[in-house]
Image (cartoon, rainbow, N blue to C red; front, side):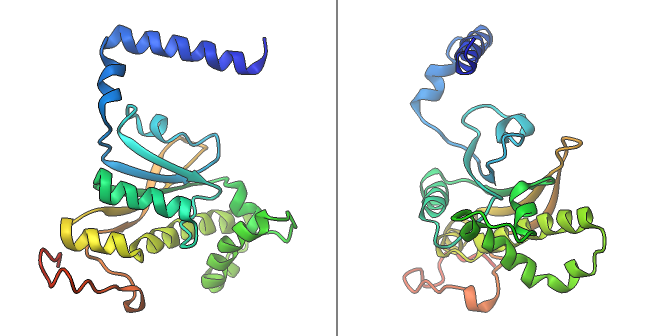
Length: 219
């Protein structure tokens, strides 16, 4: 059997399972979506957002890229975040990295990969920001895992620097920002960063919104 046909057969079995449990499963979901969460994860095939969090379709709005980066010039990612915040009204944004991330491992090397060098350079920047701590870690795997954690932390910081996130904090009191790590060896998630609504980043990244004139501000 050709590999792709297995996916089509799996889909049929999945549909039957859902309908056996709830006959209106698909008609109910087809009307609208109202997810509570935005998930910014790695493209790695071993980290499926819905499966590792045990939720159903419609619960998580998902964006994935190599090494779960939040880059301020990435209009794909920015469009997803703005839509999730302003239209879907998500209450939480989760940046989820994972141990064993190939993007982070490659960024630690001097390997030349053409265009992907430009993307992974953002991880090298994270290393540079935390070089003193990382250079002091002698064990290569431990250094790699610590960079994975620091990378997630920095991406959460990048979310807090977005003007439309700060505006939603002032007007809606949401979203909360989270940095998580998925351990591919155990299957468990752990939190490494949390930013409450209104917990502003460094002053240089803070925006003022004169049209709001202080209304509905989050302390």
